[in-house]
Length: 389
Image 1 (cartoon, one colour):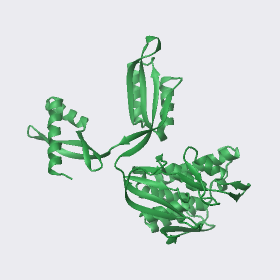
Image 2 (cartoon, helix red, strand yellow; image 1 turned 180 degrees about the vertical axis):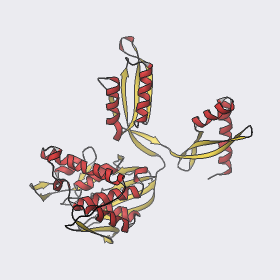
Image 3 (cartoon, helix red, strand yellow; image 1 turned 90 degrees about the vertical axis):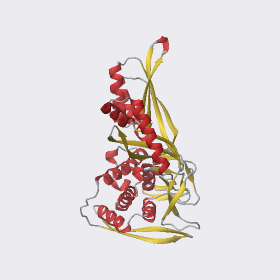
Image 4 (spheres, helix red, strand yellow; image 1 turned 30 degrees about the horizontal axis):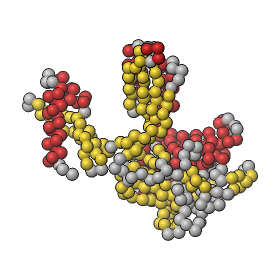
Protein backbone atom coordinates (compact mmCIF):
# COMPACT_ATOMS: atom_id res chain seq x y z
CA UNK A 1 0.00 0.00 0.00
CA UNK A 2 1.13 3.55 -0.72
CA UNK A 3 -0.32 7.02 -0.15
CA UNK A 4 0.51 9.92 -2.45
CA UNK A 5 0.23 13.56 -1.35
CA UNK A 6 -0.19 15.65 -4.50
CA UNK A 7 0.18 19.42 -4.03
CA UNK A 8 1.15 20.07 -7.67
CA UNK A 9 -1.98 22.00 -8.57
CA UNK A 10 -2.87 24.19 -5.59
CA UNK A 11 -0.14 23.79 -2.99
CA UNK A 12 -0.76 22.58 0.54
CA UNK A 13 -2.07 23.89 3.85
CA UNK A 14 -3.14 22.33 7.13
CA UNK A 15 -6.85 22.79 6.48
CA UNK A 16 -6.52 21.21 3.01
CA UNK A 17 -4.87 18.12 4.54
CA UNK A 18 -7.61 17.82 7.17
CA UNK A 19 -10.28 18.06 4.46
CA UNK A 20 -8.51 15.48 2.28
CA UNK A 21 -8.17 13.02 5.16
CA UNK A 22 -11.89 13.32 5.97
CA UNK A 23 -12.68 12.89 2.27
CA UNK A 24 -10.50 9.75 2.34
CA UNK A 25 -12.59 8.27 5.15
CA UNK A 26 -11.66 9.73 8.56
CA UNK A 27 -14.77 10.14 10.73
CA UNK A 28 -15.66 13.87 10.54
CA UNK A 29 -17.24 13.87 14.02
CA UNK A 30 -14.07 12.46 15.61
CA UNK A 31 -11.90 14.82 13.55
CA UNK A 32 -13.96 17.82 14.71
CA UNK A 33 -13.81 16.64 18.33
CA UNK A 34 -10.04 16.29 18.57
CA UNK A 35 -9.38 19.55 16.70
CA UNK A 36 -11.72 21.56 18.95
CA UNK A 37 -10.59 19.87 22.17
CA UNK A 38 -6.86 20.39 21.68
CA UNK A 39 -7.05 23.87 20.12
CA UNK A 40 -9.26 25.00 23.02
CA UNK A 41 -6.06 25.13 25.08
CA UNK A 42 -5.22 28.26 23.06
CA UNK A 43 -8.61 29.70 22.18
CA UNK A 44 -12.12 28.30 21.75
CA UNK A 45 -12.35 26.55 18.41
CA UNK A 46 -15.39 25.77 16.29
CA UNK A 47 -14.77 23.40 13.40
CA UNK A 48 -17.13 22.71 10.50
CA UNK A 49 -16.43 20.09 7.85
CA UNK A 50 -18.64 20.21 4.77
CA UNK A 51 -18.71 18.90 1.22
CA UNK A 52 -18.07 21.58 -1.38
CA UNK A 53 -17.61 21.81 -5.14
CA UNK A 54 -14.39 23.67 -6.05
CA UNK A 55 -14.66 24.55 -9.75
CA UNK A 56 -15.93 21.12 -10.68
CA UNK A 57 -14.13 18.96 -8.09
CA UNK A 58 -16.16 17.53 -5.19
CA UNK A 59 -14.04 17.95 -2.04
CA UNK A 60 -14.20 18.41 1.73
CA UNK A 61 -13.97 21.94 3.12
CA UNK A 62 -12.81 22.91 6.64
CA UNK A 63 -14.17 26.06 8.28
CA UNK A 64 -12.71 27.18 11.61
CA UNK A 65 -13.82 29.91 14.01
CA UNK A 66 -11.96 30.93 17.17
CA UNK A 67 -12.79 32.69 20.46
CA UNK A 68 -11.04 32.71 23.83
CA UNK A 69 -11.49 29.81 26.29
CA UNK A 70 -9.48 26.83 27.64
CA UNK A 71 -10.07 23.20 28.58
CA UNK A 72 -8.04 20.02 29.03
CA UNK A 73 -7.52 17.33 26.41
CA UNK A 74 -6.60 13.64 26.50
CA UNK A 75 -5.61 11.81 23.31
CA UNK A 76 -3.06 9.23 22.20
CA UNK A 77 0.45 10.34 23.10
CA UNK A 78 1.83 9.52 19.64
CA UNK A 79 -0.43 12.19 18.08
CA UNK A 80 1.07 14.88 20.29
CA UNK A 81 4.62 13.63 19.78
CA UNK A 82 4.32 13.85 15.99
CA UNK A 83 2.51 17.21 16.24
CA UNK A 84 5.45 18.53 18.28
CA UNK A 85 7.82 17.49 15.49
CA UNK A 86 5.72 19.45 13.00
CA UNK A 87 5.86 22.60 15.13
CA UNK A 88 9.58 22.02 15.69
CA UNK A 89 10.09 22.22 11.91
CA UNK A 90 8.18 25.51 11.77
CA UNK A 91 10.02 26.94 14.77
CA UNK A 92 13.43 25.97 13.37
CA UNK A 93 12.56 27.62 10.06
CA UNK A 94 11.41 30.82 11.79
CA UNK A 95 14.54 30.78 13.96
CA UNK A 96 16.78 30.53 10.90
CA UNK A 97 14.90 33.23 9.00
CA UNK A 98 14.81 35.73 11.89
CA UNK A 99 18.30 34.93 13.17
CA UNK A 100 16.88 34.24 16.63
CA UNK A 101 17.55 31.24 18.91
CA UNK A 102 14.67 28.79 19.25
CA UNK A 103 13.83 29.92 22.79
CA UNK A 104 13.22 33.44 21.46
CA UNK A 105 10.67 32.35 18.87
CA UNK A 106 7.20 33.26 20.14
CA UNK A 107 4.23 30.99 19.56
CA UNK A 108 2.44 33.54 17.39
CA UNK A 109 5.30 33.22 14.95
CA UNK A 110 4.93 29.44 14.60
CA UNK A 111 1.15 29.24 14.70
CA UNK A 112 -2.02 30.22 16.53
CA UNK A 113 -4.99 28.13 17.61
CA UNK A 114 -6.00 27.58 13.98
CA UNK A 115 -2.55 26.12 13.23
CA UNK A 116 -2.80 23.92 16.35
CA UNK A 117 -6.16 22.60 15.18
CA UNK A 118 -4.89 21.98 11.65
CA UNK A 119 -1.76 20.17 12.83
CA UNK A 120 -3.59 18.03 15.40
CA UNK A 121 -6.33 17.21 12.90
CA UNK A 122 -3.84 16.31 10.18
CA UNK A 123 -1.77 14.10 12.51
CA UNK A 124 -4.94 12.41 13.76
CA UNK A 125 -5.93 11.71 10.16
CA UNK A 126 -2.42 10.44 9.38
CA UNK A 127 -2.62 7.80 12.13
CA UNK A 128 -6.29 6.96 11.60
CA UNK A 129 -5.71 6.14 7.93
CA UNK A 130 -2.58 4.14 8.76
CA UNK A 131 -0.12 6.37 6.88
CA UNK A 132 2.44 5.63 9.60
CA UNK A 133 2.42 1.97 8.54
CA UNK A 134 2.81 2.46 4.79
CA UNK A 135 4.86 4.39 2.26
CA UNK A 136 3.96 8.07 1.76
CA UNK A 137 5.21 9.79 -1.39
CA UNK A 138 5.13 13.55 -1.90
CA UNK A 139 4.87 15.08 -5.38
CA UNK A 140 6.24 18.59 -6.24
CA UNK A 141 4.68 21.53 -4.38
CA UNK A 142 3.10 24.53 -6.10
CA UNK A 143 3.94 27.51 -3.89
CA UNK A 144 2.12 30.33 -5.73
CA UNK A 145 3.67 33.70 -6.47
CA UNK A 146 3.66 37.47 -5.93
CA UNK A 147 3.86 39.08 -2.49
CA UNK A 148 1.72 38.97 0.65
CA UNK A 149 1.36 41.14 3.76
CA UNK A 150 3.07 39.98 6.95
CA UNK A 151 4.18 41.34 10.32
CA UNK A 152 7.45 42.29 8.58
CA UNK A 153 5.73 44.10 5.69
CA UNK A 154 5.23 42.77 2.18
CA UNK A 155 7.29 39.64 1.54
CA UNK A 156 7.66 37.41 -1.53
CA UNK A 157 5.89 34.10 -2.03
CA UNK A 158 6.88 31.51 -0.97
CA UNK A 159 7.36 33.21 2.40
CA UNK A 160 10.80 32.71 4.01
CA UNK A 161 9.60 30.08 6.53
CA UNK A 162 7.91 27.99 3.83
CA UNK A 163 10.92 27.88 1.50
CA UNK A 164 13.17 27.08 4.48
CA UNK A 165 10.95 24.13 5.47
CA UNK A 166 10.78 22.83 1.88
CA UNK A 167 14.56 22.78 1.36
CA UNK A 168 15.62 19.72 -0.59
CA UNK A 169 12.32 19.01 -2.37
CA UNK A 170 11.00 20.21 -5.72
CA UNK A 171 8.82 23.32 -5.62
CA UNK A 172 7.35 25.33 -8.48
CA UNK A 173 5.98 28.86 -8.74
CA UNK A 174 2.44 29.80 -9.72
CA UNK A 175 0.04 29.20 -11.21
CA UNK A 176 -1.57 32.16 -9.37
CA UNK A 177 -0.38 35.42 -7.82
CA UNK A 178 -0.95 34.43 -4.18
CA UNK A 179 0.35 32.09 -1.47
CA UNK A 180 -0.49 28.42 -2.03
CA UNK A 181 1.90 26.55 0.28
CA UNK A 182 1.76 27.66 3.93
CA UNK A 183 4.42 27.00 6.58
CA UNK A 184 2.01 24.70 8.47
CA UNK A 185 1.06 22.72 5.37
CA UNK A 186 4.70 22.48 4.29
CA UNK A 187 5.83 21.23 7.73
CA UNK A 188 3.11 18.57 7.71
CA UNK A 189 4.11 17.53 4.17
CA UNK A 190 7.79 17.20 5.13
CA UNK A 191 6.91 15.24 8.29
CA UNK A 192 4.47 12.82 6.66
CA UNK A 193 6.35 11.98 3.45
CA UNK A 194 8.87 9.13 3.42
CA UNK A 195 10.17 10.14 0.00
CA UNK A 196 9.64 12.70 -2.74
CA UNK A 197 9.13 12.06 -6.43
CA UNK A 198 9.18 14.29 -9.50
CA UNK A 199 6.42 12.19 -11.07
CA UNK A 200 3.70 9.86 -9.88
CA UNK A 201 5.07 6.30 -9.61
CA UNK A 202 3.49 3.22 -11.18
CA UNK A 203 0.42 2.51 -9.03
CA UNK A 204 -3.05 0.94 -8.92
CA UNK A 205 -5.28 3.70 -7.47
CA UNK A 206 -7.89 2.50 -4.97
CA UNK A 207 -9.32 5.77 -3.69
CA UNK A 208 -8.78 9.46 -4.44
CA UNK A 209 -9.72 12.23 -2.00
CA UNK A 210 -9.66 16.02 -2.14
CA UNK A 211 -9.29 18.73 0.49
CA UNK A 212 -10.53 22.19 -0.46
CA UNK A 213 -8.49 25.37 -0.13
CA UNK A 214 -10.21 28.52 1.16
CA UNK A 215 -9.39 30.70 -1.87
CA UNK A 216 -11.37 30.81 -5.10
CA UNK A 217 -9.54 30.43 -8.44
CA UNK A 218 -10.62 29.78 -12.00
CA UNK A 219 -9.49 26.17 -11.51
CA UNK A 220 -10.06 23.63 -8.70
CA UNK A 221 -8.26 24.82 -5.56
CA UNK A 222 -7.83 21.38 -4.00
CA UNK A 223 -5.16 19.13 -2.51
CA UNK A 224 -5.32 15.55 -3.80
CA UNK A 225 -4.30 12.43 -1.90
CA UNK A 226 -4.30 8.96 -3.45
CA UNK A 227 -4.48 5.59 -1.74
CA UNK A 228 -3.14 2.87 -3.98
CA UNK A 229 -1.18 -0.29 -4.55
CA UNK A 230 2.03 -0.16 -6.51
CA UNK A 231 3.53 -3.16 -8.23
CA UNK A 232 7.11 -2.38 -7.23
CA UNK A 233 7.71 -0.08 -4.29
CA UNK A 234 10.65 2.28 -4.58
CA UNK A 235 12.13 3.12 -1.21
CA UNK A 236 14.74 5.84 -0.84
CA UNK A 237 17.58 4.79 1.39
CA UNK A 238 21.07 6.01 2.19
CA UNK A 239 24.27 3.97 2.30
CA UNK A 240 26.79 4.73 5.06
CA UNK A 241 30.36 3.45 4.63
CA UNK A 242 33.67 3.69 6.43
CA UNK A 243 36.94 1.72 6.48
CA UNK A 244 38.04 0.26 9.80
CA UNK A 245 41.45 -1.21 10.64
CA UNK A 246 41.70 -0.77 14.40
CA UNK A 247 38.71 -2.64 15.89
CA UNK A 248 38.82 -6.16 17.32
CA UNK A 249 36.39 -8.89 16.29
CA UNK A 250 34.46 -8.42 19.55
CA UNK A 251 34.15 -4.67 18.94
CA UNK A 252 32.97 -5.23 15.37
CA UNK A 253 30.35 -7.71 16.59
CA UNK A 254 29.13 -5.25 19.22
CA UNK A 255 28.91 -2.46 16.62
CA UNK A 256 26.95 -4.72 14.26
CA UNK A 257 24.36 -5.58 16.93
CA UNK A 258 24.03 -1.99 18.12
CA UNK A 259 23.43 -0.58 14.62
CA UNK A 260 20.72 -3.17 13.95
CA UNK A 261 19.10 -2.42 17.32
CA UNK A 262 19.15 1.33 16.55
CA UNK A 263 17.20 0.96 13.32
CA UNK A 264 19.66 0.14 10.52
CA UNK A 265 17.95 -1.70 7.67
CA UNK A 266 21.03 -3.85 7.15
CA UNK A 267 24.69 -3.94 8.21
CA UNK A 268 27.59 -5.50 6.30
CA UNK A 269 31.16 -5.91 7.56
CA UNK A 270 33.42 -6.96 4.66
CA UNK A 271 37.11 -7.93 4.94
CA UNK A 272 39.24 -5.68 2.71
CA UNK A 273 42.89 -4.86 2.02
CA UNK A 274 43.50 -1.17 2.68
CA UNK A 275 46.36 1.13 1.71
CA UNK A 276 49.87 -0.05 2.59
CA UNK A 277 48.46 -3.61 2.30
CA UNK A 278 46.88 -3.40 5.75
CA UNK A 279 44.00 -5.82 6.42
CA UNK A 280 40.83 -4.12 7.57
CA UNK A 281 37.06 -4.08 7.25
CA UNK A 282 34.54 -2.10 5.22
CA UNK A 283 31.51 -1.21 7.31
CA UNK A 284 28.44 -0.66 5.13
CA UNK A 285 25.10 0.36 6.68
CA UNK A 286 21.76 0.66 4.87
CA UNK A 287 19.58 3.33 6.46
CA UNK A 288 16.29 5.11 6.00
CA UNK A 289 16.97 8.77 5.26
CA UNK A 290 15.27 9.83 8.49
CA UNK A 291 17.65 7.68 10.58
CA UNK A 292 20.98 8.44 8.89
CA UNK A 293 22.15 11.18 11.28
CA UNK A 294 21.42 9.00 14.31
CA UNK A 295 23.40 6.06 12.88
CA UNK A 296 26.28 8.36 11.87
CA UNK A 297 26.56 9.57 15.46
CA UNK A 298 26.70 5.98 16.72
CA UNK A 299 29.46 5.04 14.24
CA UNK A 300 31.53 8.13 15.08
CA UNK A 301 31.27 7.48 18.84
CA UNK A 302 31.81 3.70 18.71
CA UNK A 303 34.67 3.64 16.17
CA UNK A 304 36.42 6.98 16.50
CA UNK A 305 36.40 7.18 12.69
CA UNK A 306 37.43 10.56 11.28
CA UNK A 307 35.52 10.19 8.02
CA UNK A 308 32.32 8.43 7.04
CA UNK A 309 30.92 8.35 3.51
CA UNK A 310 27.19 8.73 2.85
CA UNK A 311 25.61 7.95 -0.52
CA UNK A 312 22.35 9.92 -0.34
CA UNK A 313 18.86 9.07 -1.60
CA UNK A 314 19.61 5.74 -3.27
CA UNK A 315 16.55 4.02 -4.75
CA UNK A 316 15.79 0.49 -3.63
CA UNK A 317 13.13 -1.58 -5.39
CA UNK A 318 11.08 -3.52 -2.85
CA UNK A 319 8.71 -6.38 -3.68
CA UNK A 320 5.43 -6.61 -1.80
CA UNK A 321 5.72 -9.03 1.13
CA UNK A 322 3.33 -11.30 3.01
CA UNK A 323 3.95 -13.60 5.97
CA UNK A 324 1.98 -16.83 6.50
CA UNK A 325 2.25 -19.59 9.10
CA UNK A 326 2.00 -23.28 8.14
CA UNK A 327 2.29 -26.50 10.17
CA UNK A 328 5.31 -28.69 9.38
CA UNK A 329 4.98 -32.38 10.36
CA UNK A 330 8.16 -34.25 11.26
CA UNK A 331 8.22 -37.66 13.03
CA UNK A 332 4.61 -37.33 14.24
CA UNK A 333 5.32 -33.87 15.70
CA UNK A 334 3.89 -30.63 14.29
CA UNK A 335 5.90 -27.41 14.23
CA UNK A 336 4.83 -23.89 13.20
CA UNK A 337 6.92 -22.33 10.42
CA UNK A 338 6.63 -18.77 9.12
CA UNK A 339 7.05 -18.31 5.38
CA UNK A 340 7.81 -14.99 3.69
CA UNK A 341 6.14 -14.56 0.30
CA UNK A 342 7.37 -11.97 -2.20
CA UNK A 343 5.08 -10.55 -4.89
CA UNK A 344 5.59 -8.70 -8.14
CA UNK A 345 2.07 -7.56 -8.86
CA UNK A 346 0.00 -10.72 -8.34
CA UNK A 347 2.88 -13.08 -9.17
CA UNK A 348 4.66 -14.85 -6.29
CA UNK A 349 8.40 -14.58 -6.92
CA UNK A 350 9.72 -16.08 -3.65
CA UNK A 351 8.39 -18.29 -0.84
CA UNK A 352 11.15 -18.81 1.71
CA UNK A 353 10.75 -20.21 5.24
CA UNK A 354 12.17 -18.15 8.10
CA UNK A 355 15.65 -19.41 8.94
CA UNK A 356 15.23 -19.16 12.72
CA UNK A 357 12.17 -21.45 12.61
CA UNK A 358 14.05 -24.06 10.56
CA UNK A 359 17.08 -23.83 12.84
CA UNK A 360 14.99 -24.42 15.98
CA UNK A 361 13.29 -27.48 14.45
CA UNK A 362 16.69 -28.88 13.44
CA UNK A 363 17.99 -28.41 16.98
CA UNK A 364 14.92 -30.05 18.55
CA UNK A 365 14.80 -33.03 16.18
CA UNK A 366 18.50 -33.56 15.58
CA UNK A 367 17.85 -33.70 11.83
CA UNK A 368 20.17 -31.85 9.41
CA UNK A 369 19.18 -28.27 8.63
CA UNK A 370 19.05 -28.92 4.88
CA UNK A 371 16.57 -31.80 5.38
CA UNK A 372 14.23 -29.53 7.36
CA UNK A 373 14.61 -26.82 4.70
CA UNK A 374 13.68 -29.28 1.94
CA UNK A 375 10.61 -30.42 3.89
CA UNK A 376 9.52 -26.80 4.47
CA UNK A 377 10.00 -25.94 0.79
CA UNK A 378 7.80 -28.88 -0.24
CA UNK A 379 5.14 -27.78 2.26
CA UNK A 380 4.89 -24.21 0.97
CA UNK A 381 4.87 -25.34 -2.68
CA UNK A 382 2.02 -27.75 -1.97
CA UNK A 383 0.13 -25.05 -0.06
CA UNK A 384 0.45 -22.57 -2.93
CA UNK A 385 -0.75 -25.16 -5.46
CA UNK A 386 -3.90 -25.77 -3.41
CA UNK A 387 -4.53 -22.05 -2.90
CA UNK A 388 -3.84 -20.54 -6.31
CA UNK A 389 -4.73 -16.84 -6.43
